[in-house]
Amino acid sequence: MLPLLVLANAVALLQQDSASGPAASSQRVWLSGQVNVVSQWHPSFAAAYTGPNSLQPAQERATSVVATLYTGVQLGAHTELILDLESSGGGGLSQALGLAGFTNLDVVRNPTLGSAPYVARALIRHTFALSGTTQSTTRGPLNLMARVPTRRLSVTAGKLSVVDVFDANSVGSDSHWQYLNWTVDNNGAYDYAADTRGYTIGAIVEYQDRSWAVRFAEALMPTVANGIDYDWDLAHAHADNLEIEWRHGSGTGSDGVIRGLLYLNHANMGKYSEAIDAYRAGIDSVPDITAHRQVGRTKPGAGLNLEQGLGRGLRVFARAGINDGKIESFAYTECDETLELGLGWLSPHWRPDDRVGVAFVTNGLSSDHRDYLALGGLGFLLGDGALTYGREQILETFYTLSPVRWAGVAFDYQHIVNPGYNRDRGPVDVFGLRIHLEVAK
Image 1 (tube, rainbow, N blue to C red):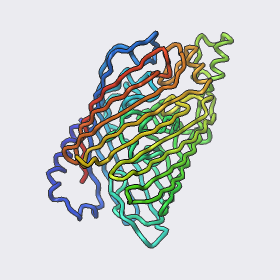
Image 2 (cartoon, helix red, strand yellow; image 1 turned 30 degrees about the vertical axis):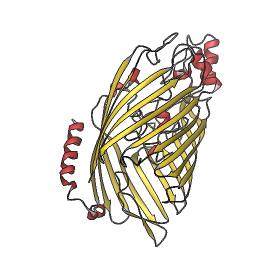
Image 3 (cartoon, rainbow, N blue to C red; image 1 turned 135 degrees about the vertical axis):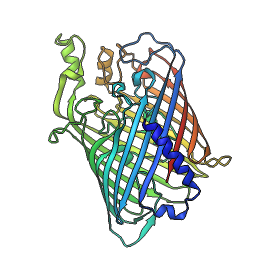
Image 4 (cartoon, rainbow, N blue to C red; image 1 turned 90 degrees about the horizontal axis):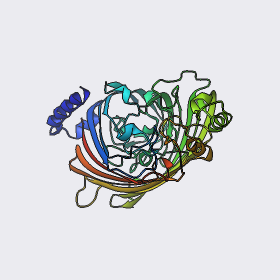
């Protein structure tokens, strides 16, 4: 039902579009909607064996539909209230199993949740002015202010997505207009706090200056890996996130950004070596990470995020990440180290509203993680029943044709070598078609 409401809202906004002008940016109320439909297909591929959490080797198709209603109001000069409703329907290839770099970021990893609408974001943000000067900023569903203080401190609290703010990238973070793969749009080794839909409850404090920024977040972890419920035992379960950002050449077309990320998760997590030892000692019939969880375990990680403008809309970007692979993957995906390089063209000269890009990412596992899977253990995403380890390598390219600013049709191709880090399976080619509608008042 929500997709229909969003489409109706889009039509109404389109009817008002001709009346929009400079005054629209001064409005304090935000109302918009988006619908993102992704259909993917892969042909059959070679597989020496297939396990319970494998990408299925027979050809298959899957379609996901995500619709969002964005609402917000600016109270006074510096306070914003944001409430977003969302519906996520359909599904992903093989129920989103068998790949660390899964092919569609829109897929909810628990298909039993259904497509009933839910609250995606419900947050309040207040910005404290630390300078007398201001600068213009682009309004959007997550940023209602048209002008912000040049130096400012903002505090955000409520239900939110950590990666709305952390590890963001203008070329490689937007699955609605750009890439689709999980480990292209986000740092695969960043096991950021989230429920199975990608949201959490937390608070973010962010300081912004002309050429640099620093942000810190505390957020709730799920009760179990990839779970929908939050763990409210804050003394033993929470996520600490710290990111520092440096910018240069702002607004020149050859501007660049460097972001350094550190995080530390505290949760009821398992340790791969303990699961392996219990299996080899005959205590467990199969390696089972869920039987060896311990309250208050910690998992640290670090990431680097770079982007650099080359002029004429061309931007190159890169990510690198690593985490403590001795502790189980818990919230995002099963990846202990990653390296990514990509190129995006945000406004090619032949069609300024189109987008085109190509990216390559290589993902890896720790020795404990790979041994666990090789002995037949299951993670929340992976488990072929055995494993001949090889790095999972993904090449993705897309072209988004945008006949009007509020709509896009994208053609996406992904080539995946060693799916699920397994040299006994694949490679696999995944072909995708995305239709996106988006209108903002």
